Length: 251
Image (tube, rainbow, N blue to C red; front, side, top):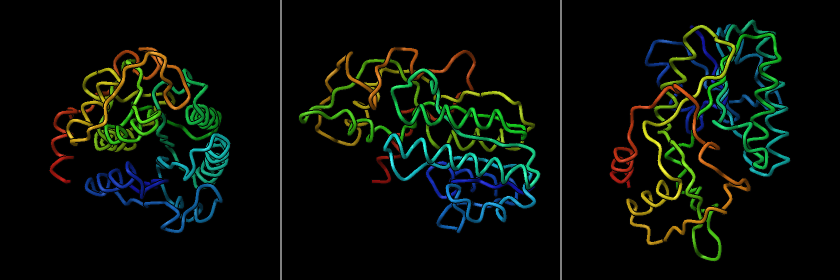
């Protein structure tokens, strides 16, 4: 089966392309580096010709709020139109758990807009919302740094390995569309400050985490429900301890 992966050269996209090819599928890794630009529409028609499934895991180069919304609105409109024209039967999109609960966060707002466009289109879909990746611990620490200290909320999170996200996407992409949201999360919940603190200790980073209930998460206030999944999410198999151990071996 031909499957087009929009954003196929990114963190999750690269892993997903590999997993799908291992399963014997014909996979197009569609990204600007391969001549396919979802934002401008360049190369989309060719990439989707003959594809039964498209999986959109693309992310914009900028985290500016306006640029985020413009990217997801424009690229999704282009991908949806190209998918319909090509006769794609299943549109899979990667989103984020809690997208509608944190409107103060520009990325979450843009993802909510993307989801609405996909739901309103004619192509059958599955939206896969995932929790924070283990791989994002460093960027969360950086975003929480203020006057040399890392201030983080103690709100609950349930982070997951990017490899487990790719595995879930590979399974879902090769199944029938469900026309609803599926949540994917890590095997265990933990406090956000503990999540980042463990990463710092494992990487021998001397920076300290200060627990601050009022600390924002990329501009948004958090509680224990903000970033955690609902009932019965699909759970990844990789524990945070195992991931930290493997990450250290690569350093």
